Structure formats: structure tokens, C-alpha cells
Amino acid sequence: MSAIPLPQIGAVPVERGDAARNRVLLLDAAALLVAERGVDAVTMDAVACRAGVGKGTVFRRFGNRSGLMQALLDHTERELQQAFMFGPPPLGPGAPPIERLIAFGRARIAMVEVQGEVLRAAENAPEYRFGGPARALGIAHVIGLLRGAGVEGDLDLLASALLAPLEASLVLHQVRDLGMTTERLAAGWEDLARRVTRC
Amino acid sequence: MSAIPLPQIGAVPVERGDAARNRVLLLDAAALLVAERGVDAVTMDAVACRAGVGKGTVFRRFGNRSGLMQALLDHTERELQQAFMFGPPPLGPGAPPIERLIAFGRARIAMVEVQGEVLRAAENAPEYRFGGPARALGIAHVIGLLRGAGVEGDLDLLASALLAPLEASLVLHQVRDLGMTTERLAAGWEDLARRVTRC
Image (cartoon, rainbow over all chains, first blue to last red; front, side):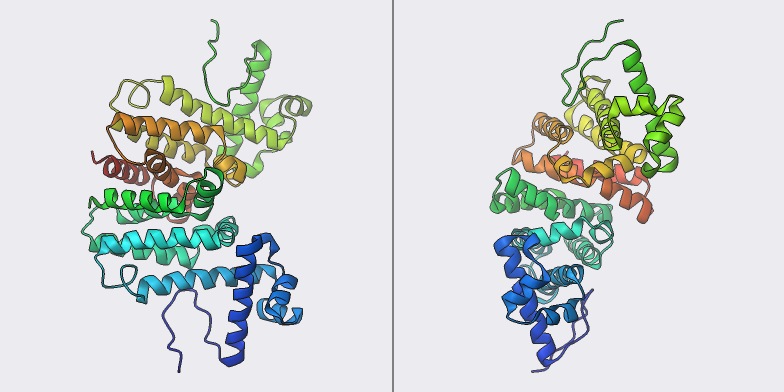
């Protein structure tokens, strides 16, 4: 089966065969380490050990730990991008805009639950936090849905306001420090989205 | 005239005479330095020089640069707290809740315009960002206004969602990187507040 290149922002060049499989193997190992032991446990050594490859392979692939974390983040973001651009409704095309918007908020909250520490680490790098391509695509997506739902006004700012409470740092604080459930956060965000769109 | 202690969160112990005047003198000098030359220009030396006192005075008062920045932030936050708790309407008591809410958003955006770099530096310390007393008081104030406006729902989360787009890091990004005016941001936040309260 041949891979069709998707017009994703931040997409890596197409890889073939072993290289692509190796990359996914290493990123899956890194994601498992984050889930099980937190982001600090993700060292080049630990990823190599977990994936059952030599340390040199990890260094050749990602350069350093920072490169590995960036790749892990891109991997996570691309999965969400693919889902909201090309996946099944309600997140993907085919559902009414307001339902897609609510599904988007829920998907981001669920993503923080799994990848929160990686996302928070990235948010603490200011150039990524607001300047990254993933954010630009998320804003554009939400603006499109607001327009599709017939919302009028300063859609740039409304989209930014809707994304602000979905930031990983805030969501992690609400879940870990305040003991809120992600279901409560998702219901709260749905309420916010319905108020903003007046639906 | 005797000072009446206000029940402000994070208030410093009451000081008298020279000590209090000295403190204000030093904080005003630090605030001017931030406004003129950015937060990095605020060193103990520069503040002493600007205030026309010896360096030892600054060290005795604030301990170190971190203590000085914290004091500067507390000073800024307390001014806003005093205004929304005890000041004239529409920010203070006496105006309808929705008008007070809108005034609160405008006041925070104006505060970022002046003290943005100090606030951003503080937000980058995670324990301050969500755990600080200033945030707790801001959330409580907004929840009270939402309740007063007859809004029903998960008011904790709605308040948190309303405060999220007012964070200094985001506002500075919108003003400096995206070239938005603070008037546009204030109008956008007012629109958000009216939608959320359905007013």
C-alpha cells in the first residue's frame, strides 16, 4: 500500500520501510515511558532500552533529547490534526460545525490526559507555545467552525479564547491539583462552546 | 491619616513611615525600569541607582532580585484587587455584575500593557501561575459576578475559561507578535463575557 502525503502542517518528509517503522517504534516507546513514568523518564537511554534498539539508533534518529521530545509532540499533534481534518465525524468533516467544535475540545482534553506532560513541556518553550504550526492550524480550524456555525464577530479572538482553557498547563492543574475529572472539564468546555456560539 | 488594613490576599504587613515610603519609592523605580527598558533591565543595581539610594538598601528590603520581582508583582496585583473590591464603579461595587465583569477584563488587559513582562515572568513560574493567591482571588471575584448576573452552570470552569485569555503571555503575544491593539483585545473580551453570560 502506498502512503498518500497529507497536507499537514509540520509533517515530516515521507520515510520508507525500516526507517519509518523504526521511527514509530521509538516514538511509541517514548510515549509509553511518558504515560507510565512521566516526562522526566524519557531519556535517550530509556527509549533505546524500551524499544530494544541500541542507543546510537535513537541519537541518529533524533539528535538529542530535545529533538526526541519535539518529534513526540509532532506525532501527537499530527494524530489530532489528521482526525479533525480527515477523520470520521463528529471530529472530522460531516457533522454540524458546533458538534465538530465540541468534539475538538473533547479530543484536546483527552490528548492532555495522555500526553499532558509532553505538551506542558512544549508550552513552557514560548516560541512553541503561541508560535507553533500546531497552534496556527488549531486556530484556523476553530475559526472555520465558528464561521460555519454562523457566529459573527472577531472570530480570531473568539477562537483564541476558546483554545485558551484547553492549554495543557491549565488542564493538568485542574486535573492534578484541583482534582477535577476530564469529563467535568469536557462538559464545561462544551458549555463554553455553546454559550460562545449561542447554540 | 491612619492606614486601615484591608483584607487583601497577599497583603504585606503594615509598615510605617520611612520604611513604607522607601518601599514604594523602590517599587516605583522598578516599575519605571520595566516600562522603559523591559524586565531584564531590573537589577538590584539599576533600581538603587534609579531610586537614588544605596544598593544595600535594595538588598535589605527585598533580599534578591527574585524577591524584588515578587514584590513588584504583589504591588501590581494589589492595586487591581483594591480597585475591584473597594474602588469606584464600574470596576468596584455599585455597577451591575456584567458591567463589573467587563471592567475587570479591561483592567487586566490594561495591566498587562504596563506590567506585562513582570506578569509573564511570574507566569513562567508554574507554582505562581495557577497556585498564587492573586489568581484565587480573581477566580472568586469572577465567580461572584457570574452568580450575581444570574449565570447558571459550572461557574468555577466558566470563571477559569474567562480568565484564560487574559493571561499576560497570551496578551503580550497578541499585542507584540500579532500586532493587535489592546482596545481590540478589550472589545473581544467584552464580546466573550457577554456571550458567556448571555447578556
